[in-house]
Length: 189
Length: 189
Image 1 (cartoon, chains in turn yellow, brown):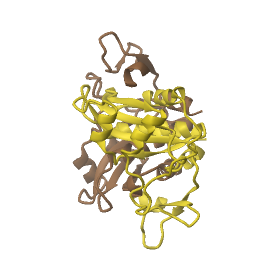
Image 2 (cartoon, chains in turn green, yellow; image 1 turned 30 degrees about the horizontal axis):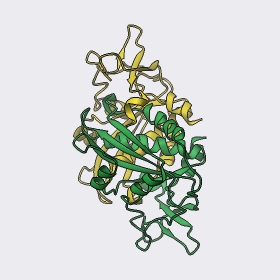
Image 3 (tube, rainbow over the protein chains, first blue to last red; image 1 turned 45 degrees about the horizontal axis):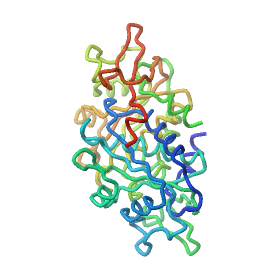
Image 4 (spheres, rainbow over the protein chains, first blue to last red; image 1 turned 90 degrees about the vertical axis):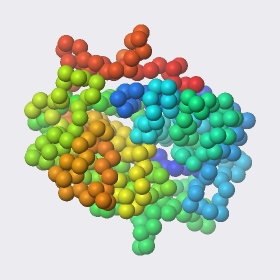
């Protein structure tokens, strides 16, 4: 049932890095994305797949991890993602369509969740360095989003907003990650 | 399986209008959206639910239908959507996050597909008129997207791109709606 998948699909930032993700799996996820709706059906999005140890390191170094956890610099070695999908807009087709990016990113992560994987979306990216590292021509492509993927190794819990109304996620001493969500009554107007 | 749902979830523009959608169903779809990832977990999106006959008409009149089908002015009476979800950004929380809009819109439509409904996303909206019709304060809210929902009454087929490479969707004489999709080899770089 979709609801179970949506609830299980959390933003995971620590992984069992020893569990590898092969290219065929990434291609299947892109095939899901390929079959989604797209603005005016332009299909401006293209994908760079990364699952090689050395290339993984390069992507890792170009991402800003969990902006709200000031003390945490990102996952340690051994807990890092096993693969990445770099989502590009091919501007030779049309300009950036961020809603399309959300559509495919969510679809990819739901697909990953269904097969026991999980991940996180990154919009905070060192774009010029990432482009240089992967020979991405920024005259043609814009880097829209990076999805990190792996086998999740953390407990993420949805909770109601605290009394002060803060939506900031936080961790307890056992590294359980809490994500406050607004209630239905607060989001239906 | 998610893939079946993704394939079944097409952009539908003709519906069995006599099949009503009650408010509880819309609320369940919003509850799916509520539990998705959100940029910095701000959760800027809010929702206006519409399933009343008169209000449906108002939304309908503010949407541009199928820009690529020049001869077609949108569905006739009897084939129009039974409900709409107007997605708003509450700018008192933070600025517009279009990737979040894609995430929730895709999730809502996958949820609708799972229960035998279907729909279409609209970015081309007469925003000022829609805001006036529904007393939406544009100083606080921006209108991000409208999702039309109903029981689909059309056959939508995915096909490969034609030789000229056009991604434009089209209909045949039986009103079957064809949507050309790029191949995997064309979107993985």
